[in-house]
Image (cartoon, rainbow, N blue to C red):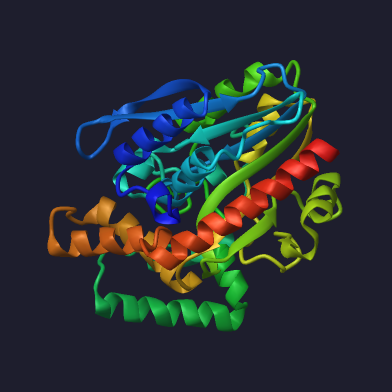
Length: 361
């Protein structure tokens, strides 16, 4: 099979292909039903496939669709791994968990967020405690999430953003928009007011392994930041921590950190790795985000902003609505042969090095 054949054009097709590949690989699959429906009226679910013993001491977890529309890529990677026999002859005491479409609603509706407009990578924190503040977002809120969307309104927004970047910096502008916020329920990069269905589902799916797992590797599959087709290996732990040191040991200078300027991403709060920690509190955890570049960061942010505007103020069944949905789809899934080939080649390489690091630790 070519790389292209592992990818799908809809959530429903992706789910079917993943489940077929998991069955052919001899995986045990558990399904978690989401209460919402897709745009076609179909069921939505997260499927977790395990290869290897349930009581394995070493566990490799790979997850797709934390940000729904990014599931086209992540699902293609997971299906490709299964079809290519990546998990044949696992070392003794080792198992693999593939968490497919942890945000099935966002995947099916081609949205970055879930059914509650929540960004899952901002949701995994203790909402009972004081929540992080984002003063930059508050200052820029009316520009980030405007009431109108047109060429004229966006020209005015660009001037506001440029002024903010001039007074602070370009990376500060990116952080103000993307780092997350917890008060604007209709806004972008919203972290929610409590645990989402996807957060609860991830912890439920992983908790059965807490009693026996000791060494765990976690790969969260993402798109939208960085050069076209390049898979950046971001440490999920900050520099100076044992987790970041292991990432550097496994991947060398290719790995980046969110807190030292080497990554294309700014530091976020409430990321999915905290869910792994909550479910598996006593393991040695090494986590990365494998982030594939698609479009320039400004275009990515604008696509997210436009999609947010569309679902709050616009009409999906309009020429403008269809254009915005087409743009956000391409932003997180360039449906192009070269990009898919680059994605699969990098994913196979990163999986191999992750497995080597996990089993030799």
